Length: 251
Image 1 (cartoon, rainbow, N blue to C red):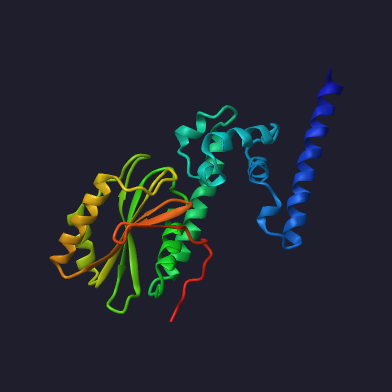
Image 2 (image 1 turned 30 degrees about the vertical axis):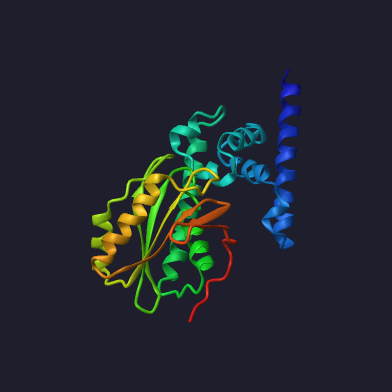
């Protein structure tokens, strides 16, 4: 019996070593992350939380439940624990990686303060970065710009559920006035693939325009953003989402 167990452990360890070599070979060669499939990246990550379990199976279960690697990393502790084979150590690891990614993205975004966004595509590429780890729930963001069109800062104005995020318009106006901005851009994400606005979305856009007009601040646009597309509620156009890595023009 012991010999059978040893053989299984040796086979399992051999698979892990091959996966490590595959990752390192791609990294050393400078190959993009597409050299490894999404489930393989997650499988390797889980090595550190599940030393004696077939993490390939767990990785596939997680992706089946949350759709993408980004979805796995943005899942809540409660939802992660609903997946068979996911325990406390795995949840801790995934939430830690999620926090580190969001921290790094946020630090990079802070460095972009005073950026001049020259096109709507630049603005949405930036918004896509902000929503990157939060497509499992609706969130609303307000971007502030000075008189020269330079980005002052962004503010999360609503952090909601998988279905909606409630916006406090008075709070938005107060924040914008306190930063002496000249114009604002609003955006919220949809958790599905549709950018079709609800009646509430259209009403919110109208109320925002009225409220900010009263304090002489322009609402340049209100976007609905999904991973695949975005819609302008001011011009009522839908456009494929630009690449997250599209360049941001600077003066």
